[in-house]
Image (cartoon, rainbow, N blue to C red; front, top):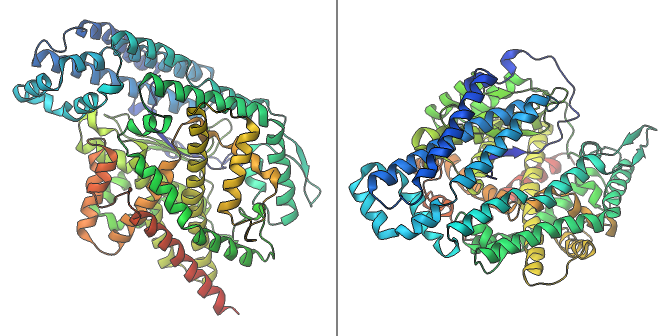
Length: 615
């Protein structure tokens, strides 16, 4: 099955109060299809095109005109598939309990599998045609220039592409992918018997995943400890089972790497977008080199929380409590005002989207939790899912997701369909950049030291969680993949031991910075992203890149602004690493990571200065 790019921010909105909303607060899926009948008609059109594209087999090298016809047909098929999938997935997201919506998403997934089967001959056949003949075709058929980069990518993948029989077989096995992830999802969301915990107030709660994200932030330290003990202790009970599920994913990745003739799993994963492994290596090296900054943050956190010995269960409560309310209209306006440094055209496009029912804003029963953006309905517009609840986290999430949405608006407006889609490696730059702009907007209007501390503390925790925590995850992931690639045994207990070493080193446990119970070392079992191989590192590289871009743009560098907007407009028209590098940020060098660390230290400098004035 194809991997559709839904850019998600998983936050604990599931416990938000339900509120009455109006049609203006919900997205308008009629922009995609006016009815289920219209969706079915387009699905039927796609099925007819699947039969039509079979006639292209054996003809891709016959002439430039025939190659263009077949590539145009393939692109139209994929564009239609994406539109069908957006409608089905967003209809289900709006109400996960509707049976027809569940059936619709299953139909979309089956169509996706059929597309993969029907087009599996393309790449092997294009390799037989060869780069010289394809270059000749492009020279004689101007319309083929649109496909230049995708065709170059196909040729680049030649050493890892099988013949048409092999590719067809791999496509069929693709339907069996993600068995470990599916089983893990079922276990974690449906089957684990979550413990009950009695809080200091006497209230008894069922500690499922949503409750964990809420109560680990409790103002009462004893409650935080009880909650973390019980939740991670529950995962310890399933250490062997979850270890087996994750091992299945690792073995699958190893197998595909071998089939595709890669030396290891990480090279295969990063080669999909031609990202050098040196980027991954540099990220891990820079995160480790800058652990003193992370540990400075933990010492500041201990000071602000008033605890003598910082413990792992002290990481999540907010540093500053503030009863700040931001109704949706105000949240939208803040996002618009924060985007001002990106220029009038950007602001106008953002305002139009916010006013045009591209977003489903408020929580409801059975609505999907968290937040995401789906931007691949090329001829329509992006869709944003929120669970807005009037707090500052909702405002930052809105800025984040609309950063994604504007990325899609700019890319879709500047690129043809075949080069409009952008990979995650670039995607999270646009979202975290807008969060940085929002912080600058909030600080300018802050009316007290307490309010400044509130915004600064939120930003600091976001940088820790998105850079240092994700870099730690990336290091853990690389280690366990390498062990499986080498043919070494790996159990859940082995994973716990490896994670424990990383967790304690990052948090300075040996130096007395953060105390971590051994029982907390099963936290790896709680992280679903490990079933998406070599994915999380992109959160850390992206926020580092956005830190350097923000440093340049907010400093008034107009050339840097144009390079940045050019990066967004570029979509997927080139290798993502090279596109980011051309825009002025080289993620294989220490500079962007140092810019992020410098930003963290500036924030802590200001927070400590405010605290010093209060003595």
